[in-house]
Length: 262
Image 1 (cartoon, helix red, strand yellow):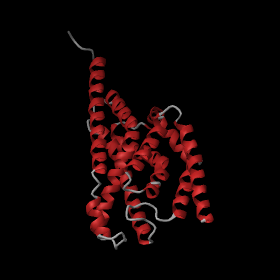
Image 2 (tube, one colour):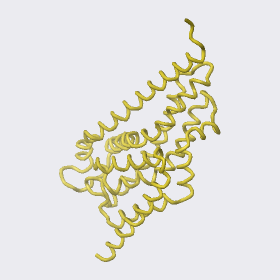
Image 3 (cartoon, rainbow, N blue to C red):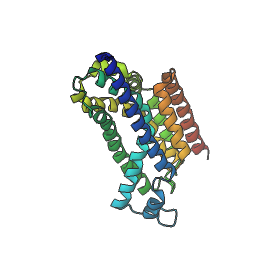
Image 4 (cartoon, helix red, strand yellow):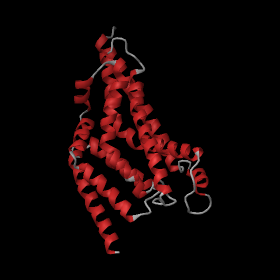
């Protein structure tokens, strides 16, 4: 009994999809395990702050620990929402590529990680600046009520901007994106960078809220990750994002009002 070429391609495509899905799930699980185990913060806290709850000058080693923490945290929070696009790319690449380039999907996913790493460098620098200005507590949450209110307002307003909505549309329509920008296996990394920029443009303001709830607050990290995922994959994700923006604006306004009253 011979197997048709189309059936063989379909079988291989499903196998590749399962392998990619398993790899993504494994990476997400490891990232969350790292966060739940403290993300190296026992060491980092001693290095950066000593035994008292006061910020100390950062060293290069401190910066490295914090940078790794940010990169792992971004991976844990963002990879689940990028997974549908990565899986779709893997499927289309296998079915359309005559050579079946095995590394294209890896390059496509790597492009996302490169952008998240670049954002993590900027976030680590922002963390250093905020700590230097005594605006973060020892648990790396906003120690200033005006700062917290301003970040809430920033994130809320951005949720309603045309730029945010344009990026979200690209994230919610992976097939449409690939149909417009498909460059084959050789263009995998460029496509990943292009879509990764939309992904980052969609979520960077939500990531800024980590400075409000605290980089050590696992529940806060999980809540933001779930919101980012729901925004991109649930049917009413667009409305959810706008509703979240309104809620953040109100939250920020009340926070700042309490500062004035106090």
